[in-house]
Length: 394
Image (cartoon, rainbow, N blue to C red):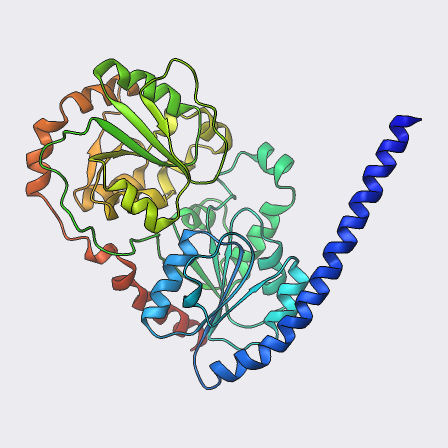
């Protein structure tokens, strides 16, 4: 009887909290309706962009910073996340349901709606179905053809179907990686819109060269935490190296006992992360083969077509990047002389140690091959995105 009462009490409490959230949302939306009048006056006669994001993350910030350089007014509609550089926006609206996004979006007539999604396509699908305007769809990590089917079914039910609808029906696709190539060639998706390859890029060129001599024997890793970090730290301890980790998200990590050469730092926004990375000489892109978490979540396609934000962060900080099996990422790093390639035959961890022990033998050669990274900056590339937006409207 007590257990039943407790369950009922929890359900009633949840219902009350839901009602409270709805009431708060109604009040907030009424305030937003008043704001819209002023915003429409401010952008009248101008070409402007509406950015829609179910979650705010650095890719959004980078693209917005580029649009500001071209004097585009930018209006942000987002669901969650910490907004950086709020002054970049003509106005910011935080909403909590696809219906609210739709209702607010209908009040605007931008050059395009640029919609960012990451493993949740509820908002993007509704916007595209209702044809609110010209839509550029930006799929952070493509699920179709890459994510383990069982993981998608259990943790993200229905999202692959929604993602396919978005990919096939948006007016344009802004592609962070080459993952949509697999959707087209292998899965036979039929894209209605044009596509542009527009990876993360850097906010600006590095203000230093790769160090001629490696003196700081500490690898830095910035990205999602997984257990392979522990394996790497244990291995490089054998040759006197340490490892520092800056997680992508604010998470609580309990440092394992006995691994004295491993340090965890707090998650940082992009500007502070770049500043922190400059203290190091060499960084690491964790190989898929030794990451159990990655191998469970993704299939083999991921290492061929994917692109990671962290390699651009590493380059912006002036670091060489230890890399092994990510094909597209490795190509870009090699192209701009920033890759420190690890042998892909035999024991990967032993190969990593071997490379670290002999790193200084190759440092002078790397320095001689310095290659301008200007073309990898958002400032250099943003004009391509502007032209892409306008081509969708032509």
